[in-house]
Length: 290
Ligand code: PXG
Image 1: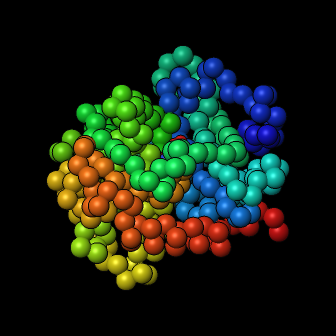
Image 2: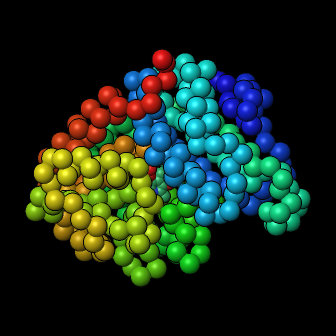
């Protein structure tokens, strides 16, 4: 594997960052997780847009332009002969002193890794997932804003550990007010009486690219889409539930905190959305090879 680090390509064993990089010392940086399907990078522009928004929010000046980042991402896929896979774009504050002040960091670092990802066991896509609500709440807007895709994911990692401890793969994270925010790396949707809803960004959800794609697909299918505040009660009494994320794609949920969702099987509309999502990922995106 060839990894892009600050404009050069390194073999994976030789692709390194300094122990003085503030990305490592403080989680000071931002990232994106992107997928390639069928020789195309899916929603590349949207991911690079979000990287710029995250960087702006933490006052991190990207050392490359939007166009250069798009090009470097595609080029990294090409060099790795990737047709289907996962791309991790990481921007760190760069090398600084042992002190958290980012002023000591002169140059941000850009890393692009093109590889593979499998976030959940394959059989769960057919069976549906069992998830639980966990004690760790999503970041407050007044702290590290949950819209920032920062390198500081400890909050979500704690929630993931709590899910692991409960013997399940994924966690429902609430916000400080007790409304549903999202899962550890996925947005959450429910379907009730044929209508689709997902928590608003103000509830602490990430502006998920897959979330937006699924909302567009649902609208095109004539499904009503809304973004109300949701409580656990709304989840328990939903007809269908699923998670969305670049890594996860669309994962049906069939049990939440011991309550069976719908008939306990992935729902009909969920399955239709999965089908339409796969059709879209296969046919659209930034071409990698000419
Ligand atoms: N919420 C959070 C907190 C995320 O980190 C999503 C929702 C879904 O957003 P997208 O834009 O991907 O639809 C994410 C995405 C990983 C991994 O390392 C994490 C994400 C994406 C891909 C892989 O498990 N985060």
